[in-house]
Image (tube, rainbow, N blue to C red; front, side):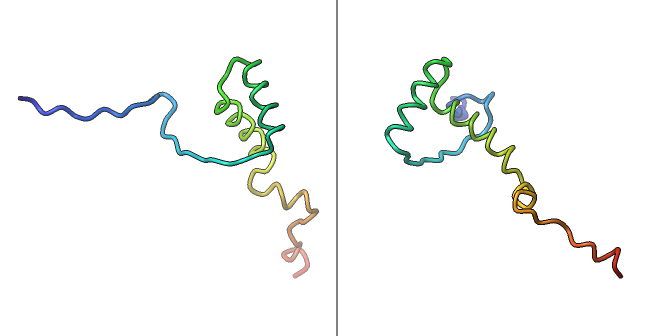
Length: 78
């Protein structure tokens, strides 16, 4: 009898996934559910797309520019 390899379940085309859970206000959750339904996508996909937008806005280095912090011109002074 040949040994069979256990197959992974899920969508391999979407790559590895990790669960992240959070709670939000009921009113906000209802708005998100309505938006996902209107777009014809799952709530997970909607939140993932919103996180992508937020990540581009808060990408590494962005917060320094927002706070007005710039690199010191030490090389030009010395």
